[in-house]
Image (cartoon, rainbow, N blue to C red; front, side, top):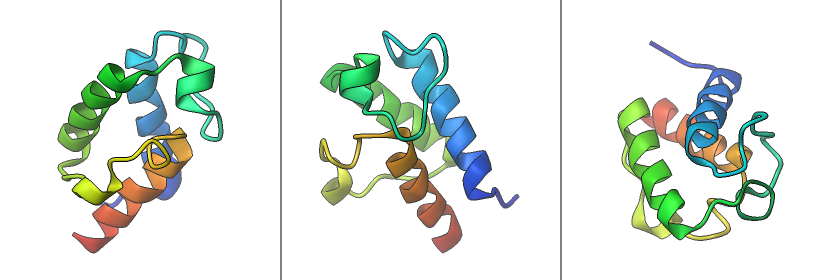
Length: 86
């Protein structure tokens, strides 16, 4: 099953909303996860595992940076790229 970038982004936002302390009203793809939604390093680890399981991918260790996990949009773009390469 192929997913569009928009579908990936929507699913990533839903996953983040389920973990983010301040994400009750939905996650905007361009909003900073740490500053806007209170996502800290422990929540990021939970998100990483959940996103890997949901999409059947593994994150490269080089991508595990604060900049990479700054917004849902950045994460969705990465996931889309991994799915297209699979």
